[in-house]
Figure 1 (spheres, rainbow, N blue to C red):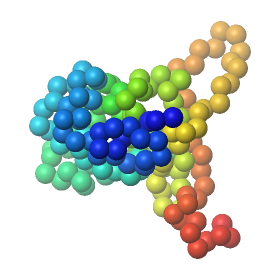
Figure 2 (tube, one colour):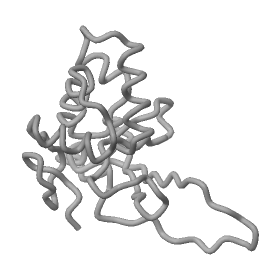
Figure 3 (cartoon, rainbow, N blue to C red):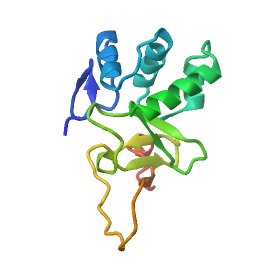
Figure 4 (cartoon, rainbow, N blue to C red):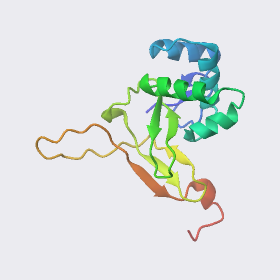
Length: 161
């Protein structure tokens, strides 16, 4: 499954990606997002996160950008399926950049892993959310599948956990 970018190209197994400016603008065109300077700046900052990020993380990274501008940009990117949101139970909504073919529909969704030690949330893109048979007249509108435990980085040297 090739759902990650490397240099603007999707590559299986990559954990973070930084598409070049031209590729970012191409992704914007695909998502019907006007490529303003601030949107390109925010997108580039988002691509640099190795894990899911919060609005506060983005504010820290782009401390010269107005908070309301960041919030509006995040909302636009979310509405246009450039990013997806994750409620991992930490008290803060987190975001992660979507793959090119993701439209944030139920079939596009994947589990997330929340590390209880470092509090990082990681997309588990190579796994799929299990299909659940719903009773008659039940209609699914969203899914939030979060696994909790200790990530590989925090587990190093702590094999007793």
